[in-house]
Amino acid sequence: MYEGKTVFSQLTAHLPRRTFRRLVKRYGVERRVRSFTCWNQFLAMAFAQITYRQSLRDIEACLSAVPAKLYHMGFRAPVSRSTLADANERRDWRIWADFAQRLIGTARRLYADEPLDVELEQTVYALDSTTIDLSLTLFPWARFRRTKSAVKLHTLLDLAGNIPVFAWITEGKLHDVNILDHLRPEPGSIYILDRGYIDYQRLARLDRCRATFVVRAKKNLQFRRLYSHTVDRSTGLICDQTIRLTGVLSGEAYPDQLRRVRYTDREHDQRLVLLTNDFDLDALTVTELYRARWQIEIFFKWIKQHLRIQHFYGTSANAVKTQIWIAITVYVLVAIVKKRLAIERDLYTMLQILSVTVFEKVPLPQALTRSDYSFEDTLDPNQLPLFDL
Image 1 (cartoon, rainbow, N blue to C red):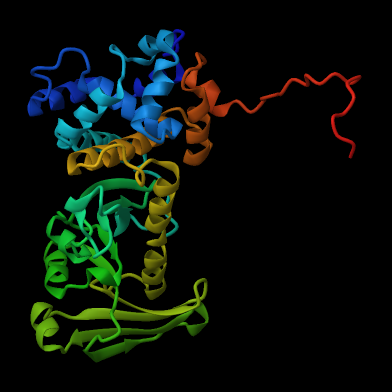
Image 2 (cartoon, helix red, strand yellow; image 1 turned 90 degrees about the horizontal axis):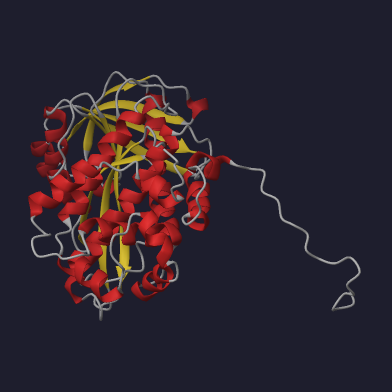
């Protein structure tokens, strides 16, 4: 509800405060806190994400410049960079991870009816990771290569609405395939994987859980063809086969039959080989499912460009994870607001508008949808030009 509130406070009004208080109590991080609560910490970090602040000093300077508006934005204590740095360093990052998960649950319900490019009743997920490079000098705990550090953001993305279902933040050294051990497969769902997730023992676990996988095969695949099915080569399909793995280790790890679909990706001028445990889907649908995996690549590119997850305000593992999880929370929050208020603009445009209107006292739907902006012409027509053109 508007009631003369700032755009920022209207945005954060969509957050479940009761859930937040329960999480703070669960982790017991406010036992000796006098004024700068976890909520103030979250508001400061969310403000930094929305307005693209570069550093703690930047956050402090911007918020201290408008002291009369802080109360109306939800702050109940002044924000200093040292206090914010200590909070990011010491307060358990799992608060923000759990809070993000609660919002993700809300967003998934709102986007459950979003159409996919592929008409299927099953839920379709894409699993992938992106590497966030760090300075080896500042982040020695995340050593990745001889000359640099890095963390990986592993994300399971629900392709209906591009909502991240879950995320794992690990050191850059961890191989992608290990994340399958943390995955809780949903029976009947479809998981789209790149070839970095090829591990036949883990894929057999997905099959035993009655989940479908579509994964890109490696070039050294050893197999025996059992059946060949007719395909329409004009669609880009080359073959659709039922196979059995013949490798010593792979055949033992996955003894059941698999389906091998080979096709030409004309958009990227590639010939790809896909493996799946689903024998009912049309072969062309299998290829369309894998092409839909590119949505997670777009998601990673989007959050790296429009959220603060490449320049960090702290150097400890706790501070880095805190910032990434709050960035994910902000992304999901904007997605929730977009759906609840029926905003037709894309998330990028919404974030751009929010970045320049956080202090304004206008109704949030009006701020996000108004298109009748006008600029007053303050130039005097009798003023001589400064430069001759």
